[in-house]
Amino acid sequence: MITRTRKSSARSSADGENPYWVSFSDIMAGLLVIFILALVTLMIQQKVETEKLSQAKIEAKEAVKQAEEAKVSAKIAEQRAEKAEELARENRGTGEEDGRASGGSQGSRKDC
Image (cartoon, helix red, strand yellow):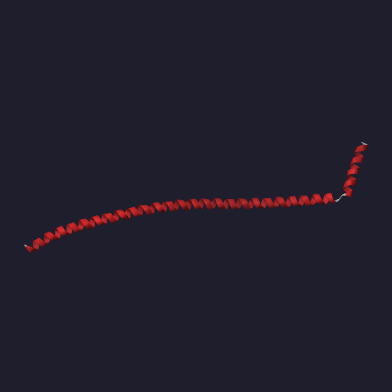
């Protein structure tokens, strides 16, 4: 028991002689707290940026989908326009032939 008392008294005398260890540990604890706060702040910023990027990615996918739909609609409209032009040409051609045929017969009737 006597030896235990002597060791503890030896430790307290060492701590009393070197008080800088106490202030050094306080500084390290404060630095640790600063690092923890900085880490938490950066993690929050990272999460916010990740959410923004994921939202932008979703919007970009929707924009691509809408662009593809518009492209398909434009292609369909172009095909319909081409068909309408073909039908108009056929109708003009048929109408001209009918007009010639009826015009020729009317002209012959007038001559009679």
